[in-house]
Image (cartoon, rainbow, N blue to C red; front, top):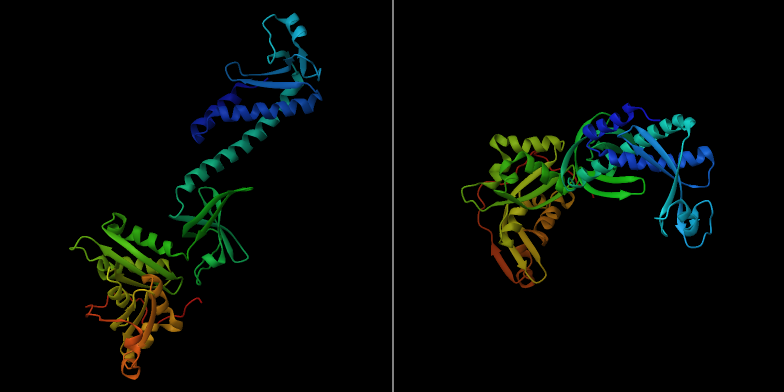
Length: 380
């Protein structure tokens, strides 16, 4: 009833797609049971067996041996079963083979449909299994469609959603475009895997640096903290246990080649690379770069600080719409209030409000990698 080529095709699928043919055989047997019962209209319990060794399909009607028969089509009494064979006991199946010469065409059509469907299911499951290992990772994908400002990209033959809120302000995608995305979340839904990707999350920039800077990828330099307002500014604190390694210089690269490659991917987003420090006061001062901080006053209990800058540095320290100070606060985990140096003389209570005043030493050369001279606005 089945051509030899059919089973040869299953062997080829197993070899090419790495899918065991037993998966297809089981699905086919179940589908052929339904197809046979629909074709013949029989109410009997049916079993279909695919036999690759003999290139045949065998169809059996069977009854289950029971003590008391309730359904004569599907059950047979122990007494009647032992008339057919003394070996039968309760729970056994009494089988009768059927031959249906006109079932071959229906079997072939059913087999084709089942194989194609099962192939899609198994490939989807395999792709999903591989993709779950890429959660929180950076991947390159292809845009397959754009709808209502959302882009839908293909990753491992699965569709992922890049919502407008996860795109850079300057992102404009067309079908066929290649782009890098950060895999935020993967979960199984009723209609298959649901994959959400982003280009705005801080982890996106972190992974770009891990790819571009070998010292980060190899663990020689660590990214201690990173915050971002996508499309406008990122602040990143880096550190190395190796005293001979300049973590900021390594991230910037010779003549800015490394960081410029990342800025190009981010379509001009400004990046501040800051040397991390375990002293929170010094770290706060560094986090406010490119402004120079004169001193930091700290309240450790409330984790609040006042950063004093020269009057002509005030707008630079705060940033447009407060962006620089806001990102510095997120980077350090401290609440930061930026004040001009003139306020020290004007406000006699400034020292009484905050118990500790710590001057900040000269931090040397500016450790901020400024891509633009002009500060940009923020997203909020």
